[in-house]
Length: 617
Ligand code: GDL
Image (cartoon, rainbow, N blue to C red):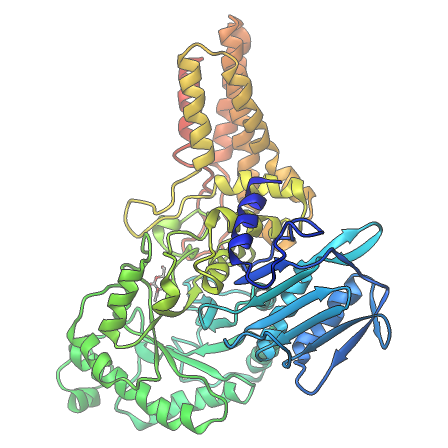
């Protein structure tokens, strides 16, 4: 049993409350399920999957859940008919949790039952069943288990809220499917450089754009994801102008007609202490923080009254206040606290735009300041700011305190311009938002990487080596909140300790890891890793191969010089110098706000190690 399996089994034991039978019952440890279920236990041996099963549905069965179940069964060579093992899918059944989106799942020789509190619950029950399939001879079986599960936070997912090239339609479709897979229910469409959302917010969509949006909205629904449409009028709106208020309504109406039922009016990153029209001075007084609060509240409350409450099925309006990254009370926040309709959901990024951590104390304080639970806009793994230039952010989702679900109504991660690479951190964010008490970065991160590797163990190991070199998580200041290359840094420290003590075998141990760095790109490219990730990470993979080869060569030079073969040592040193020059010359594509930069790999650790090794040759 691997270490993380062992840890997981321990959690399962604690969480198991369903039956007297624990994980030790027939069948052994259960497969890992992500997000970590609230309650899961082994109840019987694995149930062999016959070639045909009887799928029992009723009027409560959710169509998206039924579609997912049918395709899951077909993918495992099973046809659905009237005979065979019974699978029931619906919203009726014993043991269904009270919580929205909850579900109960049981697998035994008597049949499989998935009962959801609602349609989403059924869908999530199927997503769990998907992870209980295990190989059995030439066919498949399903692990005998009982699960009762529900999310701790009501809103979970991502906000496409970064600057720079927005995601493509293919990126967004991939993201929506991913969110459904990790039981996340929210995608907020708020790309800063999408001209119809911000710069030209008043302009109606051309037919082609509407068609594409409609496709996204349908795809979101098929994955039980709420497509939240975020219009940012703050750059030019005249708050007191009835025609501008009507323009917001018209824009919302145009996407309501496509099926959108969740809306946001973000006011982040605007100048709020000047008016965009003279009329606002007359309506709200001299510009300033309090006046800005009054003006924004007037729009948010008007849209709540005139649009949200008059349209069937529309969720509470969301907003991002202009002051979104601190805890201090202010005249602006006082306006929001005292006058904003209580139904409006307020977003907050933490104690900074990119905070080093988010604690329950902070979340409790901010809910006092805004007079409501807030919705965390989590600026990780976004990489649109200077400190993140040249980087992929592949470290675990970490630094968020267990217990936040009591104070937040949800978390959305703001991702990178690279969609597939963002799924590593987003996987952790979804896991945390589902079950914050059961969350551990050390358990969740390897699962995120294994998922990206398509279950390919070799590729997963290579991705782990690569992600260590893309581990630095910057803040807006000089100090990162997650360090660069912690595994390589620890290996380098151990190497120097042994080297200084005169242990020459230290070279071959570090060389083994250097070979893994050198070969990681080839293994990732040759394995079952998600192809979009391989494309996005291309420059970083190219650079990693060169840096790895440089490290191998430097270690060979050191070995040669310690044997007294100085001619070979100096040949290898020259070769390593050339590899370093070539590695430093690898540039990112122009796919970020920061444009073309050096593709950074293990910077501060790998380059330092190479310099230190050169000095010893
Ligand atoms: C911000 C912006 C966001 C950007 C992020 C990181 C919020 C609410 N707004 O301030 O669009 O991606 O910083 O640069 O975070």
